[in-house]
Image 1 (cartoon, rainbow over the protein chains, first blue to last red):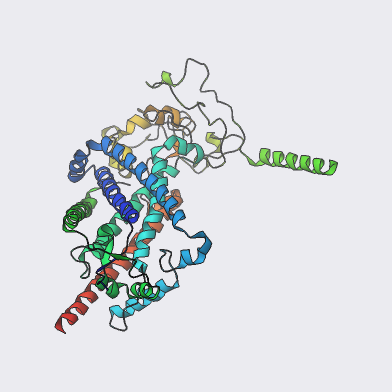
Image 2 (image 1 turned 90 degrees about the vertical axis):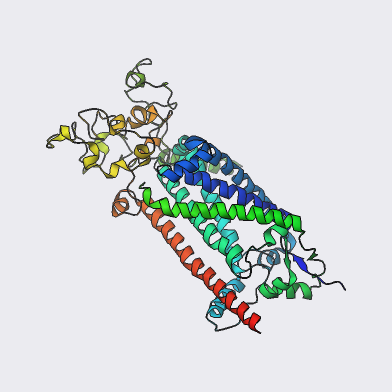
Length: 276
Length: 225
């Protein structure tokens, strides 16, 4: 029997969706911040990258439309992924991202483990914080899309809603964007890059596989389940090749640096914008 | 068969009656558009394109209203606005000492912080008009909600409607007590989003930090073994 070194974690479609989201998200952050901070020196410089205040908005709108399309395609993909004959298992099973009672248990066990009061939780394929990551984007995107569309078409909006709903739309768009940016560039980046088990980079989202050893440590219930079902061999994967690793390390770090740059400058310059 | 027909008719008539009673009534154009030639071009240089209605929405939609202006028999009329509103003077600055030597922002500081002023660099007079500056609810003020959309907003936002013009330009600070009374939806949206933001970060930042710390410790322990 050959030794299994890696097991599959993300399909190629999952990874393409993540890549798509990375690119569109960073673009939306940069163009959006260039407009939010336009009255500061940094915001002006940032807007030059996108051809100025107006062109930045144009890019922001088109990338937004692209994201909406991505969201719709992703939802269709989700519907296709559901096993309709086995609905309960498909939605609340261990391979699903839908939160279930195990997540609450795992959270409690993990808090105890933080303070040395118990063993770490035996996580299955998706941990509760990974599920949170997923659903945060899933509800954030429609909110940004709806408020974005409202401000894109103010006349149409004011025909069905009072004009002051545009104040609310602009506010919600901005607040949700700040929430998303803060969460992704602080929490998501820390989990993916800085914490000891993933440092310097958690490669699973690019290579699609995780080392079996790491999976046994991080997600013991998942590996056990695969073993019990006799599917461990089927989900074996080859370790990522070096040239591919180089590409995604360079790319991943480029996006990481952009994100951290935007976040730090946004925090610095947030004092200079007095807009309400 | 007949029974069914007549009951259907009764239902239809009932639905029609309910529709007439519950849905907003139609409103015809007002006298501002007295002739086909003398439109708003008489006041502002514009392409002259507005929505299909010129003064009031052709048909008032149930969800669309203008804050501070009551709907009903005489919608958008100044007499229907709230009585406590004192902003109906022909010269709103009458009697202010040294008025001619002062700048607007000397008193109206809060009103200089919105997008229209900061981003589009609009001056106060571009919307509020020249001296004497009338109160926004004065009957002949360009900012009176009955004509604001056409006389002011449409100068830049071609096609602005009365509903569109109810966008609050001088938005109160979203979390302030002023917003609570004057713009409650914004106020509650602000506090909802703030609690969500602070709550999410207050949970996940210590959470991630503790994960990192704990993993570092257990790795060290393993290495020692």
